[in-house]
Length: 181
Image (cartoon, rainbow, N blue to C red):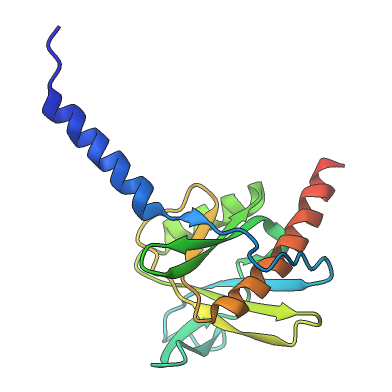
C-alpha cells in the first residue's frame, strides 16, 4: 500500500491551523465567581424593511452605527441556554460562545436554514439587576447552524463581556439543573 505523504501533510497542516485559529477558552483571571450575577440574552432575526408592524429598527456598533430591521419577538433567549464561554481569539480579541438546549438548537437550525443572507441580532444585559445592556452583534447567517451554538464578537469591553458571560453562566447552570431533575 502506498501512502501519499503530501496529502497527510495537508491534513496535518489544516488541523494545526484550525487548532491555532480556533482560540481557547479563557479562565477566570480575577478569581471571582459571582453567584448573584445575572445575565440576559435575546436573539432576534432580521426582517425585511417593507414589512410594517412586524418589527423594529435597531442600531448596532457604537463606534460606527449601523441600522437593522428585526422581528420584535426573539427566536432564542437565555431560557434555552445551556452553556456560555468567553473565548480568546488570536490577535488579542475575544468572542462569546452561546450553546443552546435541544429546543434552542432546533429553533436555531430552522431559522438559519430559512434565512440565509440575513442577520441574527443579539441583545445582551448584565449586572446585578440587568441595568446595563445593549445590542451586541449581528452576525450574518451564511449557512444553516446545526450544532446549536452561536459565536460572535460583542460590541462590548472585555470587562462587560465577562460580566455578561458570568451572569449567563449562572442562568445556564440553573437550566442544566432543571433538565437533570
